Length: 80
Image 1 (cartoon, rainbow, N blue to C red):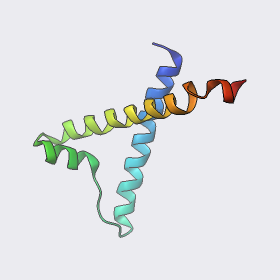
Image 2: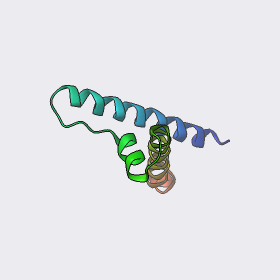
Image 3: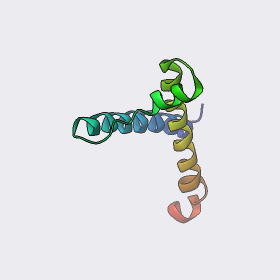
Image 4: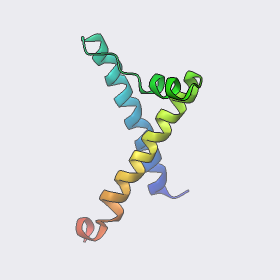
């Protein structure tokens, strides 16, 4: 696998994990509870582990989208 692709997948997993932790902490500070995995699994009528898997897959897809939009597309502008 390409190193840039590995970094993108890792960035998607880490970013999704950090976002999820912040959403969990925010509910302890009085904000409404937000649980994307629970929303995904409830909408599809699937078990919660399927929701967690989809949540992280969507996070990795967002990372690939941002990598394409910001790195590959503007590679010449940013790096000469």
